[in-house]
Amino acid sequence: MKKISISTRSRTELIDVTHQVAQAVKEMGISDGICYVFVPHTTAGIIINENADPSVGKDILMELNKLIPLDDGYSHLEGNAAAHIKASIVGSSVTVLVEGGRLCLGTWQGIFFCEFDGPRSRQVWVKVTPDGPSGGHIG
Amino acid sequence: MKKISISTRSRTELIDVTHQVAQAVKEMGISDGICYVFVPHTTAGIIINENADPSVGKDILMELNKLIPLDDGYSHLEGNAAAHIKASIVGSSVTVLVEGGRLCLGTWQGIFFCEFDGPRSRQVWVKVTPDGPSGGHIG
Amino acid sequence: MKKISISTRSRTELIDVTHQVAQAVKEMGISDGICYVFVPHTTAGIIINENADPSVGKDILMELNKLIPLDDGYSHLEGNAAAHIKASIVGSSVTVLVEGGRLCLGTWQGIFFCEFDGPRSRQVWVKVTPDGPSGGHIG
Image (tube, each protein chain N blue to C red):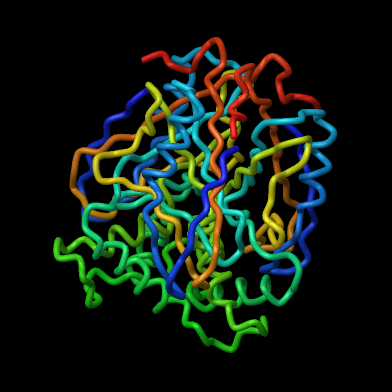
């Protein structure tokens, strides 16, 4: 796997990592396969959404912060229970098809690391598995 | 990959695509492997849930619409911020095991395309990767 | 695939299945690859989050129960619509990289089966696909 390092700067923040993931795929030299992007943290997650208009990411964060308030009578005493809950909802990994050495994303799609308990040093793990001999490529 | 085309008819709508995905798997002729189902859109998602009683899908949509209102002081000016947020929460892909040429789904499970900003022409991308020589099939 | 059986004891409950999944990976004897963990139910899900402090799981359940109330004017008449909605939000599967025969999880990460309509007998399906000959392992 390849490990991408990220420094987040706010408590909650979306960071576009599409370029770094695409670069990792390129460096692995695999033309056709599946790309797995995994976040090894419990107070951060990863999503695929629009990266053209930055207001989309702002709205996603705002609404998640509204739905899952920072303080809500939580049992966990470290002050970051909301971050754990948000991470559970958005998930720890995304999967993207790879063809011709490139991530198969829709026109408006980008990959966002979701910081819910920053600022911190974080990682994103990327692995690409190549298609087998029979390929999975018909059609 | 195989591309399935869908025409949605409402602003928010769940569409059962289990049959089309199963058909794509069959056409690829791969007996054992993993099936990836990916939605290349930022205002639509994909889930696995009950497809026996259509009221389940109605309830899922109703509750998501309640949690993430159409208007909520969003920054994104295209009027579909709620759709981006819902897509981020349900996710852009599902993964299903394939054995004997068939999707391994539980008795009540179906695959639903989730339209959150329709009606529109949409796509669902399907890829199946075959098990390698050592199979991953013990047990 | 390997099938792990679980008996849940409450209506809503998180059950740490990390050890069973790791054990299944070990028994399959695959050193490097991808591990897919799939829940074949429509009122249960699966997440990756902290398994050190049990209060984290309690908070995740509490907040999901608050966001998606047991009764909320649902159409589905079996009394478990909320469970279907929660399952759709957290998702039916997780994917974890495997290296050296071990699950690549972050320090604080564990895999939790999420019961939303128990108590019941449940299953978790695990499959590991080995890396192909070219490996996907550079870096």
